[in-house]
Length: 429
Ligand SMILES: N[C@@H](CCOP(=O)(O)O)C(=O)O
Image (cartoon, rainbow, N blue to C red; front, top):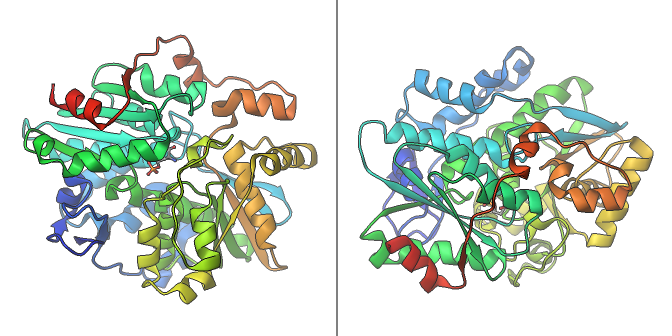
């Protein structure tokens, strides 16, 4: 499989090159040259396949022969060692819980997959790779955990000071070893811009091999397609048309869902549910892409003003606005509506949704499910990661899971980084 840059001004690369580079030299995102649908029989008999087989069959064309089948299966077995259940909430609505991994957010799968791919590519050499990553909350912790102790890899995480939850901050600042956290005086978009700038800065790239562990990296992005296929396997027997509502910030997860659809996954419609950071929602109304600086909300992992992956979504629909509109809608909700939805789901259905999941739930309501449709909103992170907000909104106490307890008493270590110059200094010294 070859990957090309969506800016169309860089050479095509293989899977391993795209993973190691992260971003193309023309600053474009890498995109698979071809997506070949799986045979219909794969989806017709999916109930007979286990998680690893589903993952292997859906990812193998993207990896090509650069990781042999046995090694790829081992990587998948290691990465997918927890559950991805769909929980029924109402008669026609369920939630796909993506928080049963080590850092209790959906980023765990992509981060662990990418870490293991890099580990495989580095197995016989001493080349060092520095992974630069920007986080608005969940990516940082997942990448820190996924790459902890990986041979030949140093991880540098940029996060916006005061704009991630206490637990998210602990997850990314307390591990030590090959993981360093840089605390940026700004918003997520500042962190993401600094990361992208570093990729183009030859005074840095002449000295070190940089890559990204945000969803701009294909190995972080593509495995997220598994979630949608795992959900389908669980829901197929309902015999209904499936509508996915995906809480969206950088739009990597929903974009991976659309890749699954391109592979042949039966999906009726995709709903992108955002908080007030509504660049894509406005675009769907006006066809004018006008990113704005991100605003802080209670669903902080989605506080993204200029979503990196929207360009990939447009590409998946051949840059045709009408065809995008047929399969994809976007809605935004403010914090008041989010809190109200959390209360509604809790009082009516005894389900504790985190603020991101609640935005996803609202997305399904705004879409308006029809008789033969079943809506799935993605619970992208465990409610405990937003402890204060959830406890205060629902007036209830949450139990702290053991994955989270582990980081609660650890000491936060971060380096204050106010601008690009500081990042550069840090990387070069
Ligand atoms: N939502 C993210 C922001 C970055 O998204 P990514 O999927 O591109 O890593 C976060 O929680 O950090």
